[in-house]
Image (tube, rainbow, N blue to C red):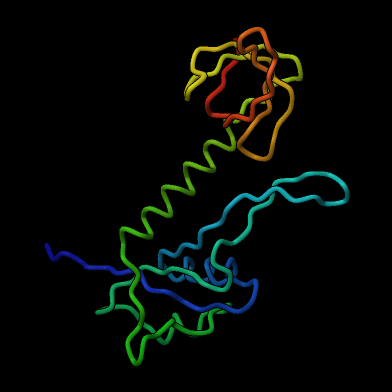
Length: 169
């Protein structure tokens, strides 16, 4: 059986049409990817978490250069052209794309598993220099951190700590 060698290439897309290009490329049978990240923004005086494209107007596509129809990919709705260096199409290292995919899937998974603590709830710090200490949850501090009260040498202190490092008592 012949081993098919696919490489990742970088596409330049029309403004805010990365998702359209992604869907059209996948309809043609090409694997494509554009990384996003969660950002907390204030919308109508309320904090909300939204996905933001990490590399606006750019999309990764995995193709076999020997069998792929580059004209078809270039003509896909939402796509402007391949990113080129001189006359050559820009290849992206497979390890880089895979690392971005892993980071995004871990982030998406952890966002779903975030425990919501209530103010005054007792928690235990699981990692870091305060490992094993009991604390009192105060409030969240962004997407990935929380404000806790801990008792250090008979003095109550406020501490900001990653959410992954605390659990309910």
